[in-house]
Image 1 (cartoon, rainbow, N blue to C red):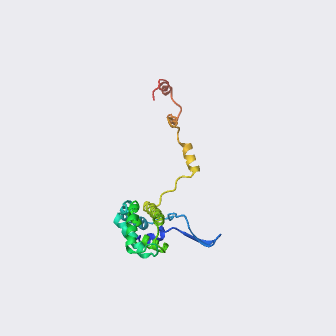
Image 2 (spheres, rainbow, N blue to C red):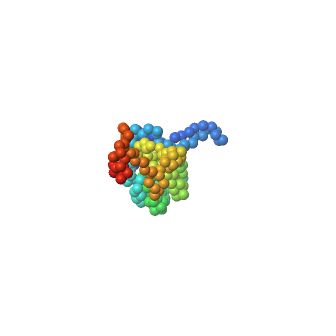
Image 3 (cartoon, rainbow, N blue to C red):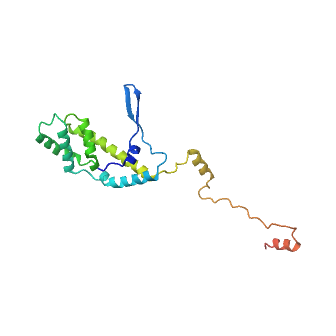
Length: 203
């Protein structure tokens, strides 16, 4: 899976908040928000990255891809797998259940994180838990790239603004009140002839 360009990496990463809590020094992942100003360069880069990765987001993993991932994990861990043959047997069983994951979940980066997390060859339940977390991470990344590609949008109106707009709109089925027509502007008193024409409804 292609890596994100450096322009996007720092923007897409979740913010980490560090401090002292109940259990001492802790690091917590904060809520991601798009930058207040999304530059055209960031917007364009996000659009390109989204297009490049869309197929990987939507394509399911193949059995071969899953087997290779599990075999590599078995070679990077120790313990429960007593031999390479045992790893291959487990990989075949695991792979039959792993093809529901996106292809982008099974790559070098996720393999490295799994190898760092597991000292011993994991059970399928442990692998599934790890891949579920990776799939959620991938979904968040896709959502972030979409927001960056859309660029800055005007904020929705507040409740007060919406109430004012609603109040000034005419009621459904009614027409705006017509302004009364103005008569002719007189510069001098009307003559008797003009009064007679107005009485007959003439201009």
